[in-house]
Amino acid sequence: MGIERELKLALVPSQHDDIARFFDERTGAGKAIALAIYFDTPDCALAKAKSALRLRRTPERWLQTYKTLGKTVAGLSDRQEWELSVEGEALEIDALIEACDDDHARKTLQGAAPELIALFKTDFKRIVWDMEREG
Image (cartoon, rainbow, N blue to C red; front, side, top):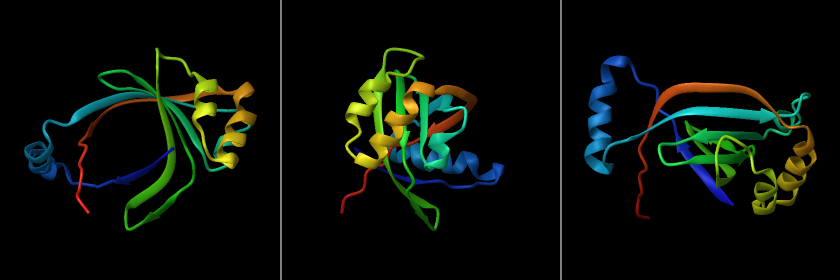
């Protein structure tokens, strides 16, 4: 399990190029991420448990990700996350359940697994810069 720490920024369109250049100079070119497929049961058991399950296509591979409720303070979010590579556009749910090391989160996912369906897809361009900070 990992803890996802994410900062989301809202920009006016006129600031985009300057911000992109700022991050590109420090981290290299951002990675474009596009297609994501979100899964839940017909009665939204995962959403009711404040969890989310998705497949995402990255430039290098497909990833399946299971996230649980975290906390957000001043735009900075922390939450539990389990992420595994998969062979293609299909969940490998047993591997994800096995990787889930939090009892409550694992039981929630295991209970939902037999009824999972694709609920919706998103397909848009999103640029991601991975940054590391010492300390």
